[in-house]
Amino acid sequence: MPKMKTKSSAKKRFKMTGTGKVLAQAAGKRHGMIKRSAKFVRNARGTMTLNDSDAKIVKKYMPYAR
Image (cartoon, rainbow, N blue to C red; front, side, top):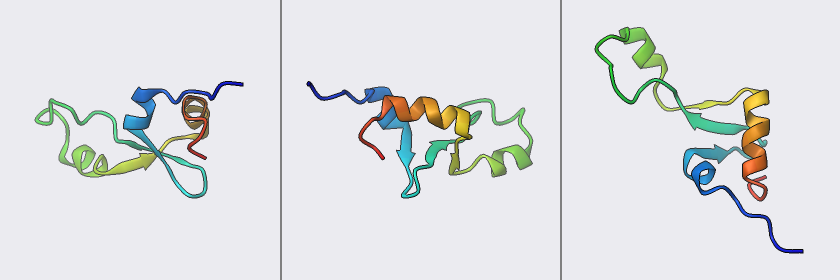
């Protein structure tokens, strides 16, 4: 059998933790920071863990990242 391929877009955007959770950048931080509240911008720093339903989709894209 041939090897499965990892989606290139997924490997650039997501990272797996040691326990198998998926880390991703916070959404809504690309542009338009003026209209967002300071609390939103502060809470959207760094990476967040995806919820289980989204993480399940991402794990299909990255078969060897477990």
